[in-house]
Image (cartoon, rainbow, N blue to C red; front, side, top):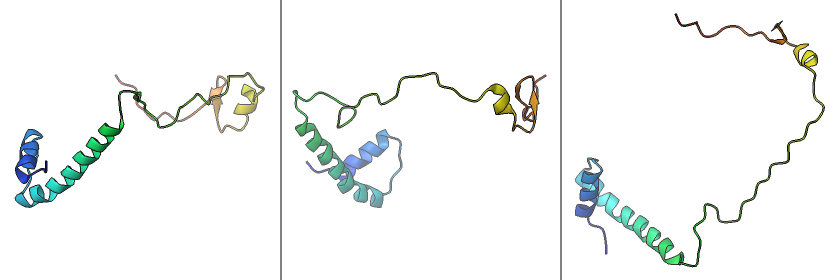
Length: 98
């Protein structure tokens, strides 16, 4: 069943999209190709094929959290241009709301 310009016009009306006659004639064969592609995929997936989000099985690849030595707060702050109360001091960029 081929899509006609009238079919596309009805779809455009439902979607509240204004299309010219030229656009309707141009889009009808393109939409037909899309519909055929979706139909082909639907035929391949049978009842024995479980729905998936990926073509291959996925597994968690994250490593376990491990506590490791790192910089002390003093060492991290030693190269900072300004510090205050053991933290980085940065310029205020937002005004306080009244």
